[in-house]
Image (cartoon, rainbow, N blue to C red; front, side, top):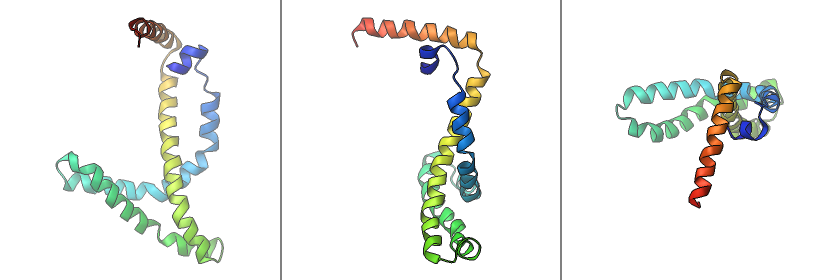
Length: 143
């Protein structure tokens, strides 16, 4: 809403470039993290009935399961990419974690882009006018 109220257009070019260039990193993140995520999510939500415990258990169990799931990467790296266990270990420490972070940001940007594409321009214009009026009311209050 903020970007539309400033430029009066949806301005999706930068979003599409972001989605295009980071798609390979997103795929690497899916390969390294999707199966452990689904396993841990379903397991924790079945075992713990109270959702207050879900986040902590998911975080700890997710880190453990993702580590076990990605451990064979060291040997696969040594066998198929470059014959160095140290480089395989470095890959194991960096790529799954970074691809998880970038992949999550990519997925959020993709969801936001789909939302922007669904909203029509007249609706955005109506909300931009409403936003401007609310900002003026806030300014009048002295905040």
